[in-house]
Length: 469
Image 1 (cartoon, one colour):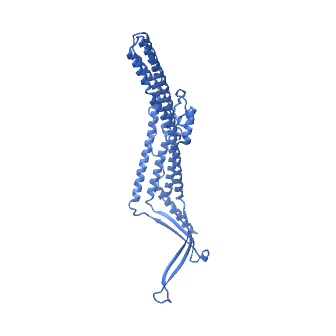
Image 2 (cartoon, one colour; image 1 turned 90 degrees about the horizontal axis):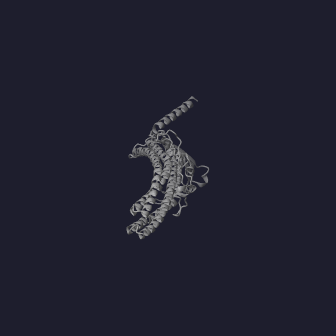
Image 3 (cartoon, helix red, strand yellow; image 1 turned 135 degrees about the vertical axis):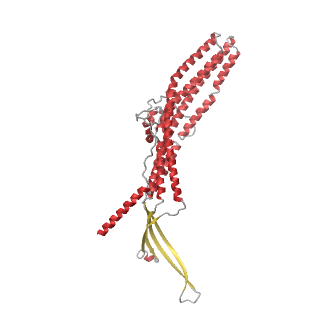
């Protein structure tokens, strides 16, 4: 009994020693030290409330836009590809889990054996053929003990890759929502520009008729008529490009929702109300809110586990194999006198592998460092995009009031110069032309200001990691 206790204690000590050695070979993952604070320029808030936590339907109140986004989530082909990549990662994880379990193979075969031999009672030079048959059915199993954590690290690496694929899919979704919304707003802005240009053409057509009438009254000369016609043509020539841009925007939206290029149902730019309560939270929240940052960390984690695996290749592998079954030379004895089995355990220590283990480790360590740099870069890029979107919203808001005053003043200038042209010689058509061109430019710029404000909200939402929750 004492001898059994000694063996038992001895086995426990050996097991503990192996576990301690395993801990030295493979390391436990810890998030690397990154600068995650203060990434938003000129924004030092400590409030953790962020619009990234909003459902996208809350941010976008336009029901037509909501419908387009939902179609995109359901049908977009990039998103479907991302889902298929998740399935690939799931299959790899299942395979890595299976490596921890024993393998099992079954084999059934019949072997014919032929040999020639000289018979004792036959004259010299006469041979006979000996023929036998072997019937065999066997099961064999093999199991590698995960002493150094190689298989466990491979499994954790595969799991990290799965989570990376899932985060990448969420990143595709946030980008898809932002792209659909931005293209939709661009389409509304083009519609508005087209409407203003068409209205301008109507006004300038009337101007041509007015200049002709004034020429007949000797108020203006032929140059004013020609200038008014050129002014009309200048507006008309922009129509084809505007219509082409509208078609292209519709086509782009159609592809995003996985449909053939076609017309897009939509509202108007004037009906849009930008979400105003733009809370950003703190930049450290990008680590859990922004999918591409999450994916980058899981990529680093996967590379970290691959380095663990590469280290474990330098240590011996303990493999246990067992085979058992039935084997007989006579079929009638197959189930009665044919049982066989064997059990083999062995350690395989790499000694010379043509530098394969060293190359594997160096490659894994370099890939780990690359993944770390990518993680760091993705986080910094996130901070940059948030800062850019905030400043874009701020500048668009600042321009709105001033632009409205500019348009009001230019509208009055156009009216005043036209009146002066009709009833006095204090001005000429060049003044009218200049004021009209300035007004059209200001009106189109006002549309761009409005578009910038709407799109900056979209870009801020995506940059903060909104759209997947």
